[in-house]
Image (cartoon, rainbow, N blue to C red; front, side, top):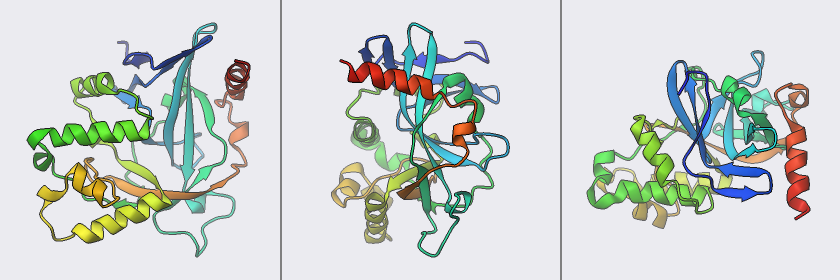
Length: 255
């Protein structure tokens, strides 16, 4: 794979007219190969002047007639980076979602990806589950499978996870996760209930039974979202491809 090339990872997950849908793609970030898959959260900067925000990858597809590789993501901003600013109602771990999803060509999305998030100080610093505690009886694999099926409507990510493992990359590389407010509250409640207990009990079944989310990533930052806002300048961003969204929506609705 050439350093500046893009390629799909895993088998297609859907076909609709001229559109082929995929679960993941591979690109290079600072000379190193990286894979992003549906449901992943990652830091981006939409333009050099914009603040860093979080993107959630929600859809990947190829338009066969134009050979365009496309993505749809939800963006999350800190309250202080929105037009209304931060106020006393906002929680310290809260982000606000842009009301409209953003359609961007993959070649432009990878230019947005931001690797230096050292100045990002917000979010609950989650304690990760020790992988050795999950190593017995395939617990880690079961947890990853559960998370993938929950986040991505039951799609099979076995081929994508294998590709990530071959690169030495897996879900432990996730640096940030955005939950819904109810999920965040359940997670905080779960942490309180299991504090001071041995890490060996932090298995997928135990955490899920408490209504929480077991985290196998290396100390990710946990945030939550409960509100949306209209971004005043995203529409002016030349990378946004609303015309592809209109084509996709029009074709799907006509079937």
